[in-house]
Length: 293
Image 1 (tube, rainbow, N blue to C red):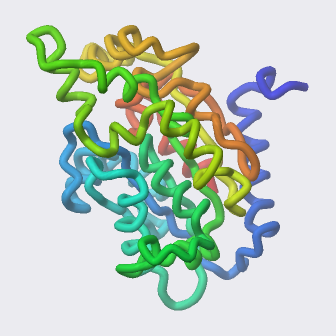
Image 2 (cartoon, rainbow, N blue to C red; image 1 turned 90 degrees about the vertical axis):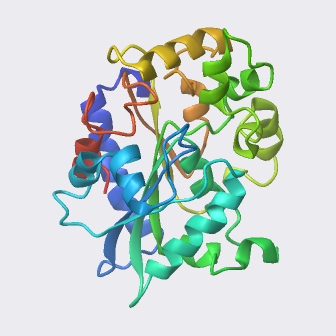
């Protein structure tokens, strides 16, 4: 039976078994406490300068509640400046996670969205780095890798995004000014999300062979989830950027599922890039709680 012939429910059941096995294979202690770590993406206008704003405006409280099984599972909500390069975001996120790792080992299960998947993947791919830049301010990627069980990455642009490629070509005309604001083409993060950048990154510092912990990916394949401004913007971007194949308006399916072993595809959802970080249009938070750890 091929992967594409599996029903989404059966596929999630198989991945759930794989998640359980990962805890044994990678040496996580049975007594270690499972802790969810939420890492947001670039944000695209959503304020991410505090934990409360990330919870309320980016993930929404219902996503946190659902994924943590009504708050019965400990969790960490990270925040960082989404305009920065993803490697800078990794330093900020790692410092917050390391502060939370106390009293022995943890089973960290990362729940990431969009660029947050790259932030987390960078930490795991560079856990053995001796570069002092990535090990100051309490970053310590190696300690995080040692305490990580696996990553659930929602719509990560692992091969870059054609929408970021488009951002470099837009000017602030009357027609495209709103797209310029949405894509934030002048931000370092946008410039580092291009497909050209990731052709180099995936061959060097983001090689999957550099990490030892699994990453399981979710790809969005829908655009018009609701009659909202975000859906209009994503549908427009999908056409203008020429995203190949199925996409969620910002990240193509091929890019979300680009990472290889350890890990693999979890499933596809018709929730677009706005909704695949939430527990509303599709109950992704419920899936995380039921099959994700």
